[in-house]
Image (cartoon, rainbow, N blue to C red; front, side, top):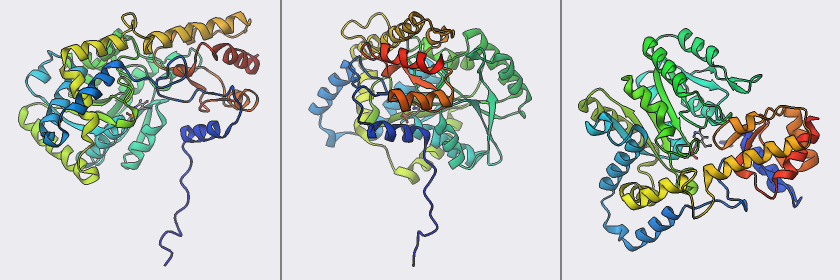
Length: 407
Ligand code: PMP
């Protein structure tokens, strides 16, 4: 019997397709602007010193004697402290249900599954646009997807009025996904004041905020400042869901370390919610790999290592090597300057005003195609540039190519 005759190939993911086209291109000066991972100025992935130190320490401890459930609890506690704040009442009083997840993707997927179980008739509101996998994740969990206004393609900034309108017009008690900082793919975030207004409107409508926090530390270089949206919602008394990943801010891409937390009203509720999250996770993959969890826990619970980590993501304090936020900011200025020197008739101000790893360039799908065809420069069709892939040695080539296809 041909068991799988009816299985047709799934449509290609746009990000995967760009990767494949890039790898197949033999041109030596090719550039891949689609990567969502941090690269140094030589285009190499970066492993922070704190991670190297933690690796060395872990090698010395006896993995076989580990109490993995104690490590897991510690990991979750340290992760929620990072998100909600060391001294927040939810942490102090244990008003959260948290479990380790397979990175940010896994945390979102677990939440989507949880949502379907306990709110089977609910839908999810995703920002327009958003990381394309959000559509796959909630789609796979068979939760109807709606979008809300976010990015204004004309101003290349936040469409705040339309966003608030959508929040007001959504049915009461809707689930919304929010990017707390360094919105992917636009790099556009609400200001603190706008977050306060969003939080207020959520309160009025009783909406549930689910934060997908993939880039904590990447927007301002400061872990706490980047969590300001969560902290505002917390202050306003919302119950929050939050997906965290250490793939980016600790450079742990292959380790798939993440955390899903859901705030609860009391300890009894937290325990019930946690047990349900664990049940879902157990049926999918039993338990996550312990190595990455150990690494992250070691860094977060050791004051010296944590301080080193904070420094490594911090804009100014990064002395040992030009890291993350600082380098990204330098490349933003450099790209804008190069375009302006070429007398480009377009306004490229948004390159430096947007934050985070991505720059929503405003390039059209046709211009993106031309860049690929003529200049061997690859990016997703939405014109999203990963600033992490822009380096001192390719920035001029890139600026010239962008100028040529937009003139
Ligand atoms: N959420 C957002 C907004 C992302 O950009 C990404 C990664 N591109 C993820 C989640 C997934 O993160 P991870 O690699 O940790 O699964």
